[in-house]
Length: 258
Image 1 (cartoon, rainbow, N blue to C red):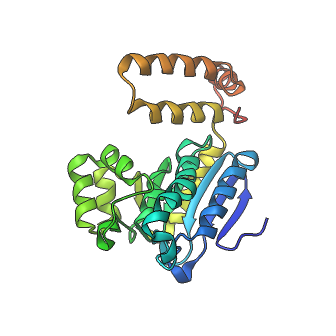
Image 2 (image 1 turned 90 degrees about the horizontal axis):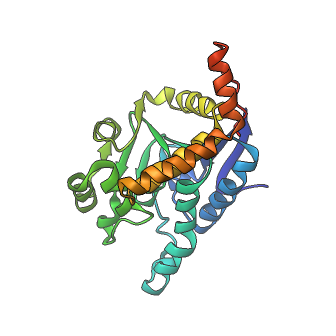
Protein backbone atom coordinates (compact mmCIF):
# COMPACT_ATOMS: atom_id res chain seq x y z
CA UNK A 1 0.00 0.00 0.00
CA UNK A 2 1.02 3.64 -0.43
CA UNK A 3 1.96 5.61 2.67
CA UNK A 4 1.80 9.36 3.24
CA UNK A 5 4.08 9.80 6.25
CA UNK A 6 6.44 6.82 6.22
CA UNK A 7 8.44 4.83 3.70
CA UNK A 8 8.30 1.04 3.82
CA UNK A 9 10.44 -1.40 1.87
CA UNK A 10 11.63 -4.99 2.16
CA UNK A 11 14.96 -6.26 0.85
CA UNK A 12 16.92 -9.36 1.81
CA UNK A 13 14.35 -10.20 4.50
CA UNK A 14 14.80 -6.79 6.15
CA UNK A 15 11.85 -4.43 6.45
CA UNK A 16 12.95 -0.79 6.57
CA UNK A 17 10.45 1.68 8.01
CA UNK A 18 11.47 5.30 7.62
CA UNK A 19 9.57 8.15 9.29
CA UNK A 20 9.11 10.62 6.45
CA UNK A 21 7.86 14.02 7.53
CA UNK A 22 11.22 15.79 7.47
CA UNK A 23 9.60 19.22 7.18
CA UNK A 24 7.96 18.49 10.57
CA UNK A 25 11.05 16.77 12.04
CA UNK A 26 9.08 13.53 11.69
CA UNK A 27 6.62 14.53 14.41
CA UNK A 28 3.94 11.95 15.08
CA UNK A 29 0.48 12.81 13.83
CA UNK A 30 -2.53 10.51 13.60
CA UNK A 31 -1.72 9.40 10.06
CA UNK A 32 1.86 8.48 10.93
CA UNK A 33 0.81 6.50 13.98
CA UNK A 34 -1.75 4.55 11.96
CA UNK A 35 0.72 3.92 9.15
CA UNK A 36 3.37 2.73 11.59
CA UNK A 37 0.90 0.29 13.12
CA UNK A 38 0.02 -1.03 9.66
CA UNK A 39 3.67 -1.37 8.59
CA UNK A 40 4.74 -3.05 11.83
CA UNK A 41 1.81 -5.44 11.57
CA UNK A 42 2.64 -6.54 8.02
CA UNK A 43 6.41 -6.84 8.48
CA UNK A 44 6.38 -10.28 10.22
CA UNK A 45 4.75 -11.77 7.10
CA UNK A 46 7.35 -10.25 4.78
CA UNK A 47 10.64 -10.01 6.67
CA UNK A 48 12.79 -11.44 9.45
CA UNK A 49 14.12 -8.18 10.94
CA UNK A 50 13.06 -4.53 11.01
CA UNK A 51 15.01 -1.28 10.85
CA UNK A 52 13.20 1.84 12.08
CA UNK A 53 14.79 5.19 11.21
CA UNK A 54 13.96 8.74 10.16
CA UNK A 55 14.50 11.01 7.19
CA UNK A 56 16.09 14.44 7.37
CA UNK A 57 17.80 15.91 10.42
CA UNK A 58 15.64 14.28 13.11
CA UNK A 59 14.58 10.79 14.03
CA UNK A 60 11.31 11.95 15.56
CA UNK A 61 10.36 15.12 17.45
CA UNK A 62 7.52 13.41 19.30
CA UNK A 63 3.86 14.34 19.20
CA UNK A 64 2.92 16.82 16.50
CA UNK A 65 1.77 19.77 18.59
CA UNK A 66 -0.11 21.04 15.57
CA UNK A 67 -2.74 18.49 16.61
CA UNK A 68 -3.68 20.77 19.50
CA UNK A 69 -7.31 19.72 19.44
CA UNK A 70 -6.22 16.15 20.29
CA UNK A 71 -4.41 17.33 23.43
CA UNK A 72 -7.47 18.54 25.30
CA UNK A 73 -7.91 17.00 28.73
CA UNK A 74 -10.80 14.78 27.70
CA UNK A 75 -9.08 13.43 24.60
CA UNK A 76 -5.51 12.78 25.71
CA UNK A 77 -6.39 9.52 27.45
CA UNK A 78 -8.10 8.30 24.28
CA UNK A 79 -5.12 9.43 22.21
CA UNK A 80 -2.67 7.48 24.35
CA UNK A 81 -4.79 4.37 24.82
CA UNK A 82 -6.01 4.02 21.23
CA UNK A 83 -3.06 5.29 19.19
CA UNK A 84 0.19 5.27 21.18
CA UNK A 85 -0.27 2.10 23.24
CA UNK A 86 -0.91 -0.21 20.26
CA UNK A 87 2.14 1.25 18.52
CA UNK A 88 4.46 0.79 21.50
CA UNK A 89 3.16 -2.73 22.10
CA UNK A 90 3.72 -3.73 18.48
CA UNK A 91 7.35 -2.66 18.76
CA UNK A 92 7.98 -3.99 22.25
CA UNK A 93 6.09 -7.29 21.94
CA UNK A 94 6.47 -8.03 18.23
CA UNK A 95 8.07 -11.31 17.12
CA UNK A 96 10.79 -9.76 14.95
CA UNK A 97 13.97 -8.10 16.24
CA UNK A 98 13.73 -4.34 15.66
CA UNK A 99 16.71 -2.03 15.29
CA UNK A 100 16.19 1.69 15.80
CA UNK A 101 18.73 3.71 13.82
CA UNK A 102 18.63 7.18 15.35
CA UNK A 103 19.74 9.65 12.69
CA UNK A 104 19.12 12.84 14.70
CA UNK A 105 17.10 14.21 17.57
CA UNK A 106 14.72 11.78 19.27
CA UNK A 107 12.47 13.80 21.55
CA UNK A 108 9.43 13.12 23.70
CA UNK A 109 7.34 10.26 22.36
CA UNK A 110 9.89 9.94 19.55
CA UNK A 111 12.59 9.05 22.08
CA UNK A 112 10.35 6.48 23.73
CA UNK A 113 9.39 5.04 20.36
CA UNK A 114 13.10 4.35 19.88
CA UNK A 115 13.59 2.95 23.38
CA UNK A 116 10.80 0.42 22.79
CA UNK A 117 12.96 -1.20 20.09
CA UNK A 118 15.24 -4.15 20.78
CA UNK A 119 18.54 -2.61 19.68
CA UNK A 120 19.12 1.13 19.44
CA UNK A 121 22.09 2.56 17.57
CA UNK A 122 22.63 6.26 17.07
CA UNK A 123 24.60 8.64 14.92
CA UNK A 124 27.14 10.54 16.97
CA UNK A 125 25.28 13.81 16.35
CA UNK A 126 21.99 12.37 17.63
CA UNK A 127 20.49 13.21 21.02
CA UNK A 128 17.68 12.00 23.23
CA UNK A 129 15.34 14.40 25.03
CA UNK A 130 12.54 13.59 27.45
CA UNK A 131 11.01 16.92 26.49
CA UNK A 132 7.61 16.52 28.16
CA UNK A 133 8.27 18.80 31.14
CA UNK A 134 8.98 21.66 28.74
CA UNK A 135 5.28 21.76 27.91
CA UNK A 136 3.94 20.73 31.31
CA UNK A 137 3.42 17.01 30.68
CA UNK A 138 4.87 13.76 32.00
CA UNK A 139 6.79 11.20 29.92
CA UNK A 140 4.38 8.92 28.09
CA UNK A 141 4.54 6.34 25.27
CA UNK A 142 6.15 4.02 27.83
CA UNK A 143 8.80 6.50 28.96
CA UNK A 144 8.21 6.09 32.70
CA UNK A 145 8.54 2.31 32.24
CA UNK A 146 11.55 2.19 29.90
CA UNK A 147 13.76 4.83 31.48
CA UNK A 148 14.23 3.43 35.02
CA UNK A 149 14.87 -0.02 33.63
CA UNK A 150 17.49 1.24 31.18
CA UNK A 151 19.37 3.87 33.16
CA UNK A 152 18.19 3.59 36.78
CA UNK A 153 15.94 5.77 38.88
CA UNK A 154 18.34 8.69 39.40
CA UNK A 155 19.11 9.24 35.73
CA UNK A 156 15.52 8.57 34.68
CA UNK A 157 14.36 11.24 37.13
CA UNK A 158 16.96 13.74 35.97
CA UNK A 159 16.15 13.15 32.30
CA UNK A 160 12.44 13.56 32.93
CA UNK A 161 12.46 16.57 35.26
CA UNK A 162 15.25 18.58 33.62
CA UNK A 163 14.33 17.67 30.03
CA UNK A 164 17.93 18.23 28.94
CA UNK A 165 19.35 16.73 25.72
CA UNK A 166 21.40 13.58 26.26
CA UNK A 167 24.06 13.27 23.52
CA UNK A 168 24.41 9.90 21.87
CA UNK A 169 27.83 9.18 23.39
CA UNK A 170 26.49 9.79 26.90
CA UNK A 171 23.37 7.74 26.16
CA UNK A 172 25.61 4.80 25.26
CA UNK A 173 27.71 5.28 28.42
CA UNK A 174 24.54 5.20 30.52
CA UNK A 175 23.23 2.06 28.85
CA UNK A 176 20.28 3.87 27.28
CA UNK A 177 21.29 2.61 23.82
CA UNK A 178 23.46 -0.13 22.35
CA UNK A 179 25.96 1.69 20.15
CA UNK A 180 27.11 5.03 18.69
CA UNK A 181 28.55 5.25 15.19
CA UNK A 182 29.78 8.01 12.91
CA UNK A 183 26.90 9.83 11.23
CA UNK A 184 27.88 8.63 7.78
CA UNK A 185 28.08 5.01 8.96
CA UNK A 186 24.67 4.82 10.63
CA UNK A 187 22.66 3.32 7.81
CA UNK A 188 25.27 0.79 6.77
CA UNK A 189 25.76 -0.31 10.38
CA UNK A 190 22.02 -0.66 10.91
CA UNK A 191 21.71 -2.81 7.80
CA UNK A 192 24.73 -4.90 8.83
CA UNK A 193 23.12 -5.71 12.18
CA UNK A 194 19.72 -6.27 10.58
CA UNK A 195 21.26 -8.66 8.07
CA UNK A 196 22.78 -10.70 10.89
CA UNK A 197 19.42 -10.87 12.64
CA UNK A 198 17.50 -11.64 9.44
CA UNK A 199 19.74 -14.65 8.82
CA UNK A 200 19.54 -15.85 12.42
CA UNK A 201 17.30 -18.25 14.38
CA UNK A 202 13.93 -16.52 14.37
CA UNK A 203 12.23 -18.71 16.97
CA UNK A 204 15.10 -18.23 19.40
CA UNK A 205 15.00 -14.46 18.85
CA UNK A 206 11.26 -14.31 19.49
CA UNK A 207 11.51 -16.38 22.67
CA UNK A 208 14.56 -14.43 23.88
CA UNK A 209 12.65 -11.17 23.49
CA UNK A 210 9.70 -12.56 25.41
CA UNK A 211 11.84 -13.92 28.25
CA UNK A 212 13.87 -10.75 28.70
CA UNK A 213 10.75 -8.57 28.58
CA UNK A 214 9.08 -10.72 31.22
CA UNK A 215 12.03 -10.84 33.59
CA UNK A 216 11.47 -7.42 35.17
CA UNK A 217 8.10 -8.53 36.55
CA UNK A 218 9.07 -12.11 37.53
CA UNK A 219 10.80 -13.55 40.56
CA UNK A 220 13.62 -16.03 39.96
CA UNK A 221 11.44 -19.12 40.27
CA UNK A 222 8.93 -17.81 37.75
CA UNK A 223 11.67 -16.78 35.35
CA UNK A 224 13.41 -20.14 35.56
CA UNK A 225 10.14 -21.85 34.71
CA UNK A 226 9.64 -19.50 31.77
CA UNK A 227 13.16 -20.26 30.54
CA UNK A 228 12.47 -23.99 30.69
CA UNK A 229 9.23 -23.69 28.69
CA UNK A 230 10.82 -21.37 26.15
CA UNK A 231 13.90 -23.56 25.73
CA UNK A 232 11.69 -26.58 25.13
CA UNK A 233 9.91 -24.68 22.36
CA UNK A 234 13.20 -23.48 20.86
CA UNK A 235 14.53 -27.04 20.88
CA UNK A 236 11.64 -28.10 18.64
CA UNK A 237 12.57 -25.58 15.95
CA UNK A 238 14.25 -26.43 12.67
CA UNK A 239 16.83 -23.74 13.40
CA UNK A 240 17.96 -25.57 16.53
CA UNK A 241 18.48 -28.77 14.57
CA UNK A 242 20.37 -26.83 11.90
CA UNK A 243 22.51 -25.15 14.55
CA UNK A 244 23.47 -28.49 16.07
CA UNK A 245 24.28 -30.05 12.70
CA UNK A 246 26.33 -27.01 11.68
CA UNK A 247 28.32 -27.27 14.92
CA UNK A 248 28.97 -30.98 14.40
CA UNK A 249 29.91 -30.46 10.75
CA UNK A 250 32.07 -27.43 11.58
CA UNK A 251 30.31 -25.06 9.18
CA UNK A 252 28.25 -21.89 9.40
CA UNK A 253 24.57 -22.57 10.13
CA UNK A 254 21.92 -21.81 7.51
CA UNK A 255 18.98 -20.76 9.64
CA UNK A 256 15.51 -20.54 8.12
CA UNK A 257 14.06 -18.34 10.84
CA UNK A 258 11.74 -21.08 12.16
